[in-house]
View 1: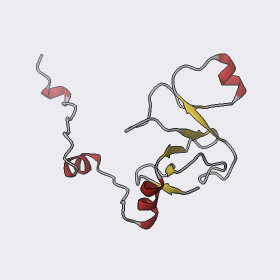
View 2: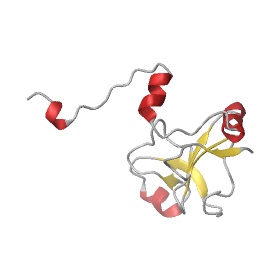
View 3: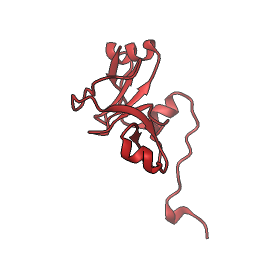
View 4: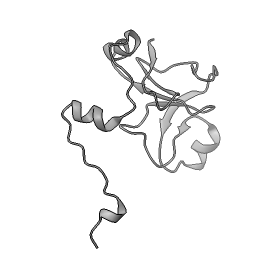
Length: 117
């Protein structure tokens, strides 16, 4: 299994080729499949899943999460993880400029004073 940190802003977000057994952030065996939304009482008490809450991560929901430290793990191809490990892919802080460089349309949320009433 390969694993690498994937952002500068989130110290505990990782890309990996499969589900980790031990969390690299807290060193405990608490990594579980991550689900979001309102859990059933059975799911809440059994501790079978990492309960993410009602809002998924950006840009996509995490695949697994650590129940102890809330570390996020995203499943990626080996070539993507290799890029982070070898330093060819830089974790970026400024999502806006990265999206513009990639040619992706950036739509910003207007400030309250810019909204016409």
